[in-house]
Image: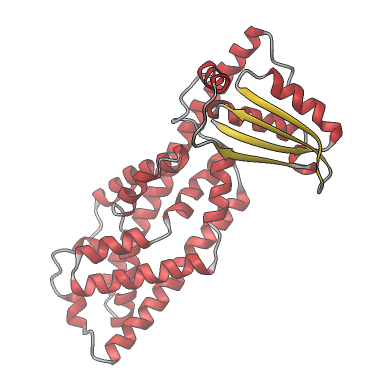
Length: 323
């Protein structure tokens, strides 16, 4: 169940109330005339079955409410309502499976923004990955994978293609490129400093590393794991089941590959650079492809579910014509 808070000018309120009243997926509708001060207008509160949220939000947007007011969408984590239960039961689909595109897109914009926090996590994760490679430590490699913030921007590239958001695609691509370039550059400088201090030698990088050799030896399984992990990660993001994301982070080797590129640059070891770069490209390509396919499939499924819901509502004769 989702909770909507709608701020609308008085001239649009009647249409919004009519739309929400007629939809069987909406319950607990409250109208507060003149409650909004800036911008001036009315406030509407309503509970909506998650499965119907996309269609209702699209129809409210078609009225022009976001331009003159606002639509806030909040998940109702806990709710006790017979009317809400009936509304949820009447709506085709499962709440756990439903994708609220406005929610997913907003999160993509927020977490794909290039900012100091993102760059800090990228740099710290890449530094840990570099140390993990020198020590041949699987524990530190896993730590670097979990710390890396790059998954959401990678998934956002697929979302931007599915939702046809050129601006969002540009934001995510810029964040990824700048993030990896800055992280690799700083990690390479740190490796040069460690080399100058005599803490790290070329033999530490080129030695037989049984636990971290996979980082610069990509193969077909690297691409396959990236596909599977990204599909699972996108499902976790769109369904709000974030518990699965930890498994995604420790399945792909984007950050460890970046750390190995930095070491290769610092010590002039070309095979480490090219092998790790290929690993990085394979992982990102596989994740973008899987994210796009997963989101495209979800979009197709929920378009079909929306059409089915529209037919059911039309049969009841309670749905007003779309604005």
